[in-house]
Image 1 (cartoon, helix red, strand yellow):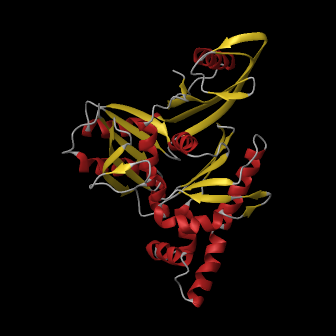
Image 2 (cartoon, helix red, strand yellow; image 1 turned 180 degrees about the vertical axis):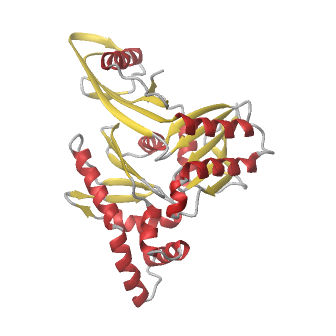
Image 3 (cartoon, helix red, strand yellow; image 1 turned 135 degrees about the vertical axis):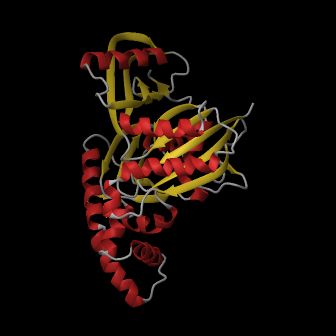
Length: 369
């Protein structure tokens, strides 16, 4: 039986929307729209929340004649959410029966003992077990196990309530009868990459317009997430040096493809090197922080706008202090074997990974309500 959902991807530079048809072997993505949030200037950066809501409203106008979806899945990238990962452990002297309910009960007891609740003015988006380990072995706990040691990687995300209320209002105006759920891109991408790829250790790198997210997966669990306020627009502004952002973005693209003259390449190369120093410094610092908790793997899945992936790959695939990184750019082609696209849509890396997440049963995830 087929069903229809709407997926909304909200980043720091653009908003993407698509319709998703479920019920077939592959998710079918139709009618894709992506809208820029702002011009990328410092002035626009200060009004980014208001501009983002406007971009969502504008994107949804393209779907007024579309059959209404049953669900609307809103996926937030940074800076629109905050996330925290906890490792929760419990032991017993004798083997006990461990089930998914055992895990949920253990997590609830942990939060009760810590007296942790969602702060006022914030809305809880997700509370999910990325991986459970019984006696040190990863398990989806699809059936009960006997064990003496339980370790749980637990992920929570939350967002500003005023912002989510504004997004809810915009979505309700377009689809008044749809059920709306909120999610974070970092966890969505982690879950899909873990399901599709052979690697059980990898770095997840999402370079947005104004902010960068770094996640680390280790032994099939989501073990670390961090962020720093430097993105592709930050770098482009530094290269432009007060000039045209569009011209700077174009020259960066040509520079990455080695399509500039020798003189032009030398000129832009110097600016590019200087402009990326802050990003590199922040990235190295965050990896050092992550290394205090988990080993840093070389394989790094790199998310970014298609036009920026090439030059992003140049700064990511390098040695950052003691860390050697091998980047795997997540291009639209990355998902062609897994996602079907109809004639009104196009391959959008972010919407494709999100559509895969909502199409799958997500049987390895334990949600804590």
